[in-house]
Image 1 (cartoon, rainbow, N blue to C red):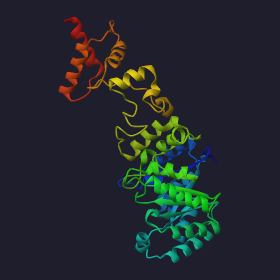
Image 2 (cartoon, rainbow, N blue to C red):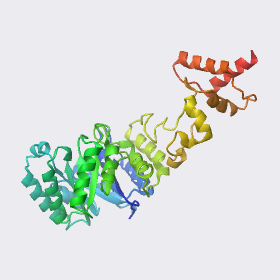
Image 3 (cartoon, rainbow, N blue to C red):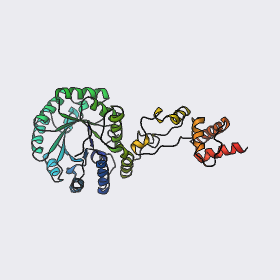
Image 4 (cartoon, helix red, strand yellow):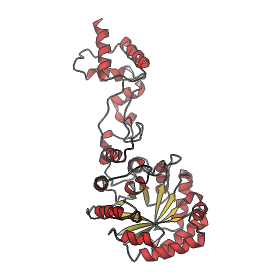
Length: 377
């Protein structure tokens, strides 16, 4: 079984990710994604919802039978029939979800006492059938803290191995998440808590890091942040934040980030924004004169880590409106037809005028053509 150096990441691309509107993964795509995630050393994969039917059970069973090093987990509603269907997949780990807020309890026709009793009944039942049982409380952002504590105490007392607290509609901010998990880890030391964040307000990754800082041992993530509505915390972002912001070791192999990102992009049909951290097309692209001049001396001046660390090559400087003389000289010096690498002010101004008129950056060939035209006049 794989594990991270300090934190446990649960990738739910094949469960919550596929729940994103309009996304369907084929079995072949699921196998490819699960295999790559296991090669990346992601310790746990949440791969589907057995109650969805025979095909879903077959898919989950197939992934389980691959013999991957990652723990394979399925997701269930708080219903015995869901747990029974999960048994048919042959997995050894199950997650069972319960409504946490008054809003969701009304939707499911439950009250606090009924939720607590359901947790007792389902944990007792599931622990007889599975080696690992995770309990989830949905919509903790709108749940009462006293009720959360009661749920946590009850679930652990009856044998749950981990408790997932889900910000189901992405309402929380990092300060709130930190306060929540600080309180829980102080009250229940040595217990395993997980945060599952949604990105409706753009804070899923930040909230996940706040949870880890406050003592949570696990977080849910997906490749490319795929997930319902605005998605979940991003696997690559969480891992690199653990490494470069928290300064903690993480066993997950970041060199696979680009491959896994492109694989899920193709399988999901969801294009990656150009400015997506780590895997976006322009995540390591530079144009401005101040930046390019500094980058030629030391890449660390304007990059938090090397592109090769996450499985991508270094990009050439962009030939745009803000390019400086040092950057342009560097670009032209690599062209086989350029012998005189002294870039005149006139050449740089002509390139910037062309960029402005075309309202786009130039190719290296276009820049070279301008340069050659000027030096031959």
